[in-house]
Image (tube, rainbow, N blue to C red):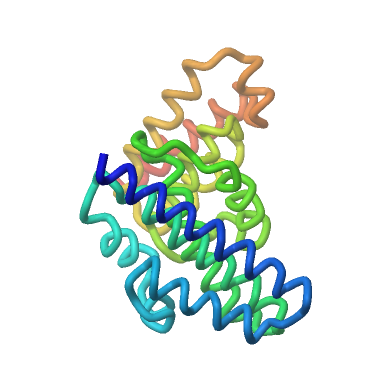
Length: 219
C-alpha cells in the first residue's frame, strides 16, 4: 500500500510539472520552463539534471531499477522528464542535446512499457511513438535497440521489429539466438497477421535464410 501511494504521488507530481511546462512553452518562456524541469528532476529523480544527462540510458535503468516493485514507474517518470527536456532543447535550437535526451528517454519509456508489472500511462505510448519518429531504430545502446525491437513486435509492427533485431545483430553476432527466436515466433503467426505487420511469410523465410547463412559463414 505504501509503494502504491508513493507511485501515485510520483505520477501526480509529474503530471503537474508537465502541465506547468506546457504553459511555459506556449508562452515561449523556454529558460523558465527548463528551470522548472531541472527542479522537478531533482525532486522526482533525486539527482541534478546534469548527472541525468551524464549517464547513459543503461546506467539510468540500473540506477532507478534497484527496487523492482517500483522500477518501471521510475523509468517512466525519468523518461518523461527527459522527453520534455529534449523538446525544450529543440525549441531552443540545441538539436545535439535534444537527440541525446531523446535516446535516453526512449530507452527508459520502452523498458517501462515492456515491464509486466507496469500499467502504461495514457501518454506513454504516444510519447514513445513521437520519440521513435525523431531517432529511428539505430539507438546507441545495445539494450535500447533490443527493447525497441520487442516494443515493435508487441505493437504488431513486425517489419520494424526485424529491422531493429538486425541492427543489434550487426553490432554483436552473439545476439543471433534472439534473432532466431524472433523468426520462430513469426513462423507461428497466421499469414494475415504477418501481412498486417509488414512482414509477409516470404520475407520471414528470406530473413531466416539470411540468418542461417550468416551463422554458417561465421562457424
